[in-house]
Image (tube, rainbow, N blue to C red):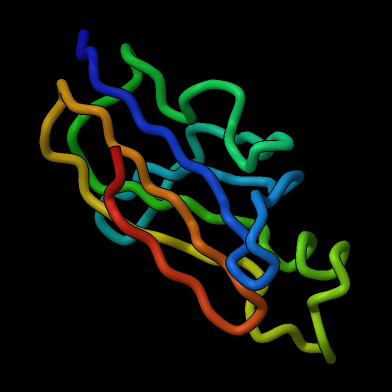
Amino acid sequence: MSNGYLTTHVLDTARGVPAPGIAIALYRVSGDGRDRIAEAVTNADGRTDAPILPPGDFAPGIYELVFSAGDYLRATGQAGDAPLFLDAVPIRFGISDAGAHYHVPLLLSPFGYSTYRGS
């Protein structure tokens, strides 16, 4: 069993605040397919209440976080005209160290986003 884990959070960079209420799905990617292995919703601090991939379930491989950003942008009046420029935001990344903490945040605005490997 590994002691590594995966966390995430979402910051609304257009408004300068955490982004609550964003649904997140985590997938393990294998070849051309992917399997949904976890779901969470961001809390008032823009974070999930627990690691989205806790120790014990954590393993090296390719993963994808998909953030339902469009629902949040509509709810906060930032969506603009349909279709949205950003709706579902996928971030695909690799985990190579089974004993490490990986933190993959989303910095979101209505017309752009970024990420990084945090701590």
